Length: 228
Image 1 (cartoon, rainbow, N blue to C red):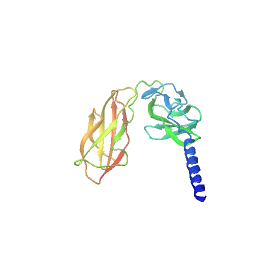
Image 2 (image 1 turned 60 degrees about the horizontal axis):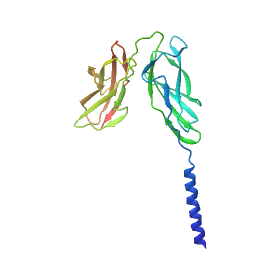
Image 3 (image 1 turned 90 degrees about the vertical axis):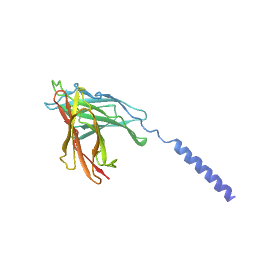
Image 4 (image 1 turned 120 degrees about the horizontal axis):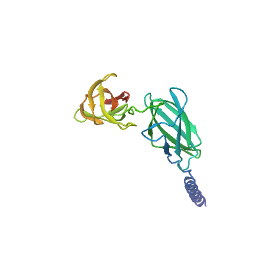
């Protein structure tokens, strides 16, 4: 009799657990960004001062979402602003003549999981601006803090350039073992350098300066990595 009761108890427990799993709340899906448009100058802001303007961000909500967190990053200073909202828009005060990136995190009160949208870039232009500096180069490899294994004592450097005017002409690359790396190649037109000789167990620093056809420049910022 006890064996029968135990079997029934186990079966009820299994069914109960299965039922709980099926009632888990669905995770929120990613928002779709609308504006400011990716890789374009933003000229629709409202001026606040000679140096700042208010920019309105818009996106379309994904499924199973009832709140958002928008993250906007100043690409020159790397400083982030975050703003929680329950609607699919937000207005933030930003520096003029400055490149930014932004993405939206979708959240739900019924799920512990949150989901990020893709990331877009834009240039918050100033009054009367007609030329826009390149976005700081996006470092792809090696990344900040990465530990890499050289192949035959050599590594490759890779980055991605973009510009609201689409007029990038070349790059200068700085590379070395100090926090003030030396210029190793200038005015190169490709977004990468191959077969750079390195030592093992060494910390290296590097950065990329991007130039456009009007003489504007941008600095990727300094990146650090180690070899093993």
